[in-house]
Image (cartoon, rainbow, N blue to C red; front, side):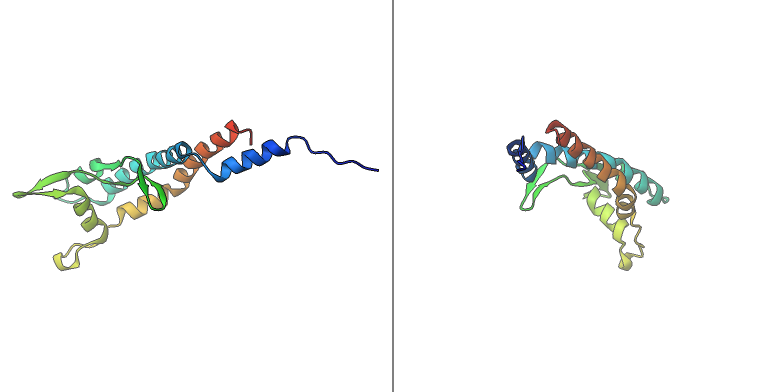
Length: 144
């Protein structure tokens, strides 16, 4: 009569259970790796698309990633033009200027120039690869 034996099934079950609950550190490392790809992509696209006689390149230089945040859906890193600049007598957030450039302002005669969306679409495969490398390193550390 044949006999079937399993060796190491308990450790495999434990390893698979740990995959179902990724440590925050791994999630944060994946998000940061992806953000590190998207930030320069957005800066480059903004520099090439948002040109004009009033352009000083401030929007592109101001694109940065935020600190890790905890949201209702989990962890997040936001990438956007940060800081402010002086416009006339008041200060304006760089994110507001980026919004107008990205989506336009028809009443003011400003056409949309979607540089951020275009950069994200172009850099998506590279960003996913960066996050995947972090995840695969975690899997390797678990011998999976």
